[in-house]
Image (tube, rainbow, N blue to C red; front, side, top):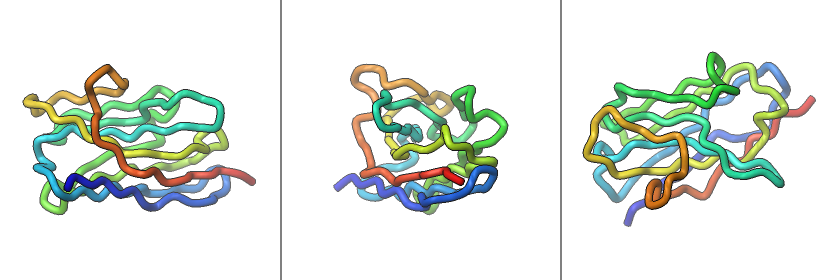
Length: 129
């Protein structure tokens, strides 16, 4: 049974850091690109960062470039999102999602139809002073 479990969210002050973890199980993890999406109240779900199945390619939405860093450990089937200098606009529920792909250096940062069929339950990140 394919499972993605996010952890690491919380309530933090602006300028501080969090590291989110996405633990995968029940599928061939190294055949999947992984992405982090987030959704704030009243807003559409937004792609934040993605990493190709090989780890060679990473992408970030402009608003987090230079602050967030994605990485993966294919041995332990885990993806991390290091989030530094958090700001109130980063407040959202963060989800990790898996996208099967035959391409080692491809990941998608948008929810194209038919992609990212597997999702975790989400972890809340709240940035507030």
